[in-house]
Length: 214
Image (cartoon, rainbow, N blue to C red):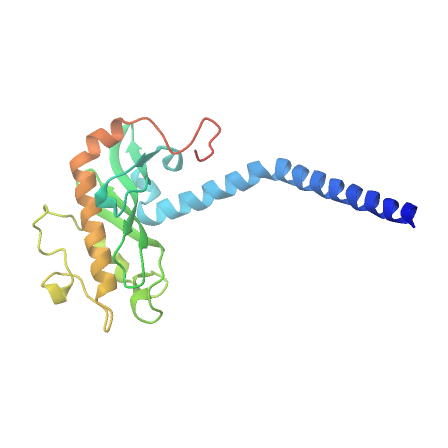
């Protein structure tokens, strides 16, 4: 009986060791492929707000981490810097609207050095289906309302929903969500406009020398 238990134990230990080795091998041989896929997805997201024709650098790799209240919280946010012929043309900034109806709304906004917004995308939200979720491009074109606009300073009263005498549509039964997004995009655009020279002067900080996130 003892020999049987010992034999079964050794078999299980051997099986566990083989499984561990297989997992390690799979990870070793697929990590580069996974990293490449992550970079492709990231670049697709960036190009959704900033057309590839606008820049000629490796946008997905020219990234710094920035922390500022204008970005919605005290966490580091990624800022990707677009250049053409070595000249800064735009920043693509991850930002947060902290005051959505059901929680924070994660956004990405592309803002030119001339202040013109080329695009905004919602990355993550938990807004009410059928109401607040219209900020999602898959639900409506509302998020495209920012394209081609610029903020003319902190007192630019146009940057509000129409219920607050601004120029952006609100949603029937859901004013809080679009109001939060409009405020966030405005703050982010002003932050970039006021700090763009300093932001383009910083060293890349989103990735280490291997290309991994720190």
